[in-house]
Length: 191
Image (cartoon, rainbow, N blue to C red; front, top):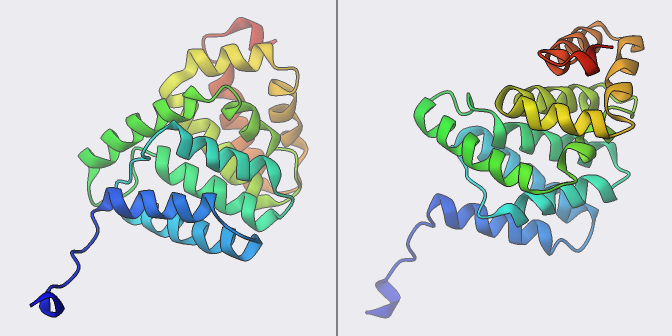
């Protein structure tokens, strides 16, 4: 009888928890990349909520500790998908709910915005592009908190302004959008 019992399909919450466990326990760079790839795939297909702020902290820790451009890209891509209220487009109500939940978890970490701003510095187009997209998402939801952080962080507005010198038009255009959003309703930042 026991042999005939089949294991139940894990719930989306269980899948998310397992993927974050895999990422946290990754033994090497290949394990990190594989866990991030699976997280990215799941986050782009489902309205995936993180289990807790610790999951976001784990992603930010991986982002800060890695020197590998590919890993930085993947972490930022996962964060964009977790915080974007339009992903997945097949479930708009669920997408908005998970984005609000995940944004709260993201903003609980005092180093979150700083970690993303530090990703504006590398020359890799996709790292910069995803960092800008993530900042635009966070600004759209929590403008006041992010503006306050940028005002108190010495690299904040300077990092965004330096993007205007990027040789790639897509980065320059999104940098203009980011600066416009950052300076909206803030006289101090627009100076």
